[in-house]
Structures are given as structure tokens and as C-alpha cells.
Length: 129
Image 1 (tube, helix red, strand yellow):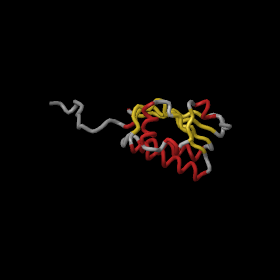
Image 2 (cartoon, rainbow, N blue to C red; image 1 turned 30 degrees about the vertical axis):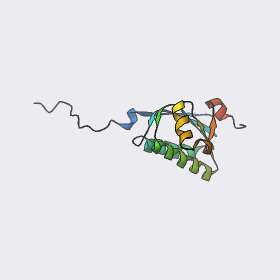
Image 3 (spheres, rainbow, N blue to C red; image 1 turned 90 degrees about the vertical axis):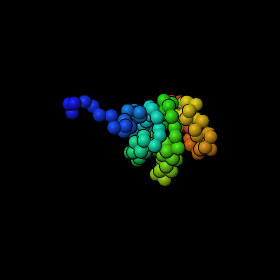
Image 4 (cartoon, one colour; image 1 turned 90 degrees about the horizontal axis):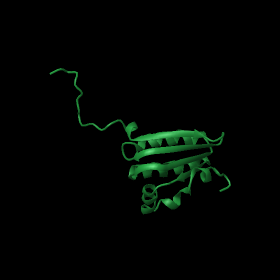
């Protein structure tokens, strides 16, 4: 047979295929990172890298999780680390849970009260809230 046929080695797909980040500036002091897809052991390092970069760049980072379809323990650990990093820098991290999946994961682990949350992106961007 020809060596031109694709070989399925059983390896998982590119993590970029299951998670996407849309980053939008809202002036010099605020930024929104909209996460689309699954946050699991494969994609959590990508989220971590994205959050490390964004938290360092702006005083207010809004993490919009409304289109997250799965949030596993690795993703929860990344969120806690990002919260700690944000606090250490004197910056603010606000979450927009936006879905039952994210809210339940945070509630069931007792982590929801740790985070500053908002019902939507406009509310999260309101610095007086």
C-alpha cells in the first residue's frame, strides 16, 4: 500500500480544536477573554497561559465562561491559580459563569464564593460594581 494514506495513531486531536479564546480590549484598563469549548486536563494549560498573559496586562480581566461546555478539575485549578495571581498583583479577575455547567462546577466544589462574579459582560466591566 501507498504511504500517502493518513495514519490514525489514536492520539488526541490538537487542543486548539476543543477550546478557543476570543480576547477583546475595553479601553486600556480592561479586557474580556471569552472562552469557547472544554476546559479539561488537555486544554487547562492553554487557559493557564492565556490567563497568565492577560492578568499581567490589565488591571481588570473579565473571564467570560458562558460558552464553556465542560469544566473539569484541571480547569478549576487554573481558575484558582489565576485568582491568586490577580490578587497578588493587585488586579481584579471577574468571572461571567453564564452557564449551568460552570456554575455547578464552582458551586459543587465550594469555589463559587471565592470569585468575583457577574451575570454578564457589561456588568463585569462596570468598575463601580
